[in-house]
Image (cartoon, rainbow, N blue to C red; front, top):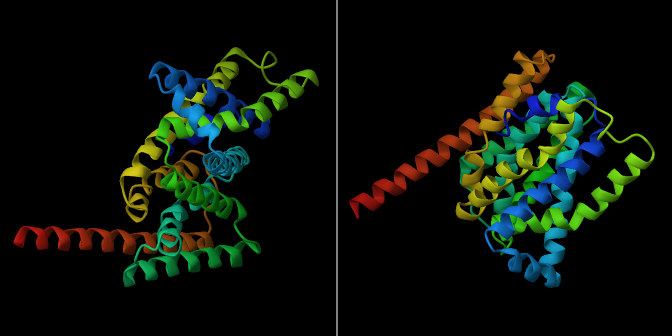
Length: 283
């Protein structure tokens, strides 16, 4: 789902990026809260908002998620899909690092080598661009730390996402009303197809996030990274094959280093799991 979503945002390229994120927040809240009420779980959200620690934790995760959405939509609609895919290629390896230094998960030698390859790949990007690949780094850092907070949250996936959207929805609603007041808002001023796409941002946003949240709470943070290669691979393919973005030799070198890190990390995970399975079967 996340791999193909640039096609969706590309159809909304004519809408201001900040306004798109405001719509995304508001309609995600409507969709998620409706599902929560249908499942009779509204009391969980009220309890979460009554806890100071939970409130602060979810406010921070909501802010990180909003930053991630804004950078991603801006990047896609300004011709930087390759750099967006780079950001999500970095997320699994950032998860490995966060698992080690924040959650005290132990890293094996090949995992250290994988992180070093990714760091070297970013360094090559910096040398090529003459600046840090800020879109990729912002996406990786915001989503990596968002995943860390979701891992530590006591709230269920649906309740957590409902709380996150509710906390920032008032700001989003205020911004949208201001845009409409100044005559710059999209609703009522764009074609019917674009309006329907705007109203569907909640469904497009919420379903993949709910699936991610369910997965993040059930598996190790390092293992979570293994499953996150698909989305950036599809995004990268779209960038080159559909959007025809330039892919220079230097950029290819940077990606090759990051892919090498991902390959090492994958091999290490598969090899370790097989050894554990073998040891259990012998026992």
